[in-house]
Picture 1 (cartoon, rainbow, N blue to C red):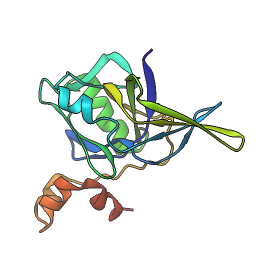
Picture 2: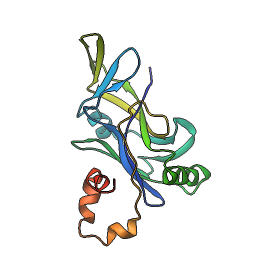
Picture 3: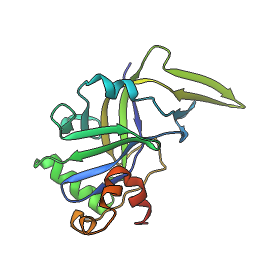
Length: 182
């Protein structure tokens, strides 16, 4: 069964979006249960070399990039599943750049299948909590309707960043850069 979840942060420099498609240890209420993504949940997916797509709002007709094509780069760090996406010069890419710039699209989502033994369920008082430990990631998506609500978008031109001393720090840890733009 394919499952969809939303979370992340974005920043746009015209044709490139960066951010987090998932944030570790952030609990999301999903109705009858809450869900938490644990560090390492995407490790096997990223190591497998499988093609992971970037879409707009989980629509396969709105393809934005792929890992196989080199237009989508994914990595896990201590904060979550980080991405860099080179937007295509298509109607979807152009529209998304405008929607991010306006603040209408501020979040990310992802689709996955849980691997055997890849989740753990726990009853905490009246709340059932699911921990995602190992998932087979099939896509990230940019959306205005995320399941995980704790994300923001910061916009800044790449030209200005390149003039700053800490450009390499930005590339290695974009969340630090996002924090400075609030």
